[in-house]
Length: 275
Length: 324
Image (cartoon, rainbow over all chains, first blue to last red; front, side):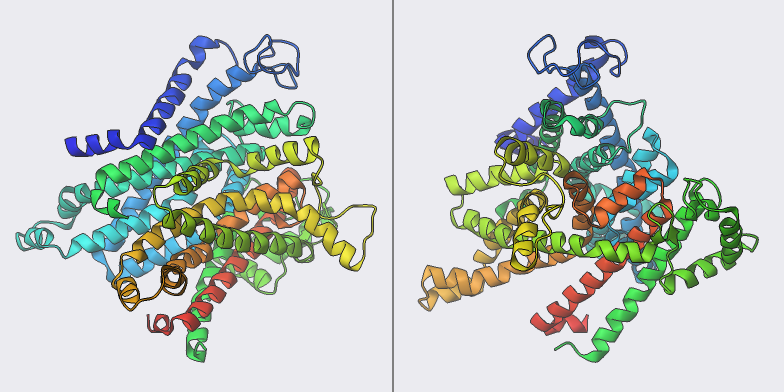
């Protein structure tokens, strides 16, 4: 573990990513301290450019963009983490069962996974939100539904490789039950791969969320970065910063998570480093 | 050539996928508020009561669920996807009329992304840890984190609003009525920004993949052999390393056709490119759920077909695949 930590710290891009990510988390945490009150509130004249009365300017209704960006960090992190958590649980369950039991179960579960990988996933997410409604819980559900297949495939591969190792065979010959072998013996050995893939999935989930809210499929009660860009689009010619500012926020957050994910990969799977 | 038995087997494997999509569509219809007839007629309420009654009867909404599913299946299999009152034409016709622009956009993006991605990835691998590698790696990290719609908007600000080089939206100049070569040129001019926007993201992905793939191949025994028999470095790279290193990239590109379609929805919305993606956005706004379901069905079928084509190409390149 200490080695892994050292490898992570020595990986410069990963450190940069971690610092950026911590900044986003802090922004989300202090949003209501810095900007008490509703971020949808009108605070001044519309269309003020950045660095005037307001650090990031105001949008076409006179709402403070800086407040919107801070509150948007909350939404983005919440949806990204929650959707990834659900997708990880589903993916690990399906992939684990398929990889451990093999045969018919594997064939069936993998056909299901392939089906979900064939579907244009963004369009499917749009459909789900359009049908179910756009509350924050339903958006999280929709993103989770379209994100689990890569995790299932990865875990299946790991479980298949572990299934015939000596330590698992030893467990079987000791008469241990399937559930215990899976949870106590195989799962901890696949954890590093799950953590790395999961961390990269957060970035994808955030990109999907911002895309959905850009198209107008966001929770109307919650401020989100994609929503600001979507609503600022109509005034792009005159007030381009309304779209530019939240976009930079998305870019930096997603990049930070990707960098941390890569760093974790190098730290936890040192054998892969030779590439 | 792939054997006939293999082609038939792959076709047979595609059938359950398509059926599963139909069932999924049916389930989504059930989840939507109101009954299927409400959804199919569009929530605008523009359908006549007679049409509604006829719809309810043709769907057998008084019948048990499994019979409803069979009836729905029968309609979809005959490519009867319902009628869009918003657009005043059958959904299937509407979708066919919008298919061309989307295929043009996706084809351009896929070709550009694979070609430039392979080029940049191998360049980075050949100059490992030098400035070229660092520059390309930094750019790919940035491009891979950029939301596609935002990249599109920023390109519009820079190249259309400030510099005025490219049009902001559409596929052709509305009032120009170009013919022949002028028309092709006009469409290409409009295609530049949407294609570049969508390419950036996938380009980054393929460049990263290609870099890793080249580095992996470079340590293989056959490369040592090629060097040992006195081939120049250029020959080793071109004739041996690159050809093998490209395979994972091509596989990935095939897998991602569905994802690129999702990106097309966003890009077409940003640039008002008159394809299926823009149609999906419009139907979302008009709450025309049936049209959206139709687009979903057709685009998934499209992905299945492309995957099939990629697999058949692969079996030509590598006959061992047929045995699996």
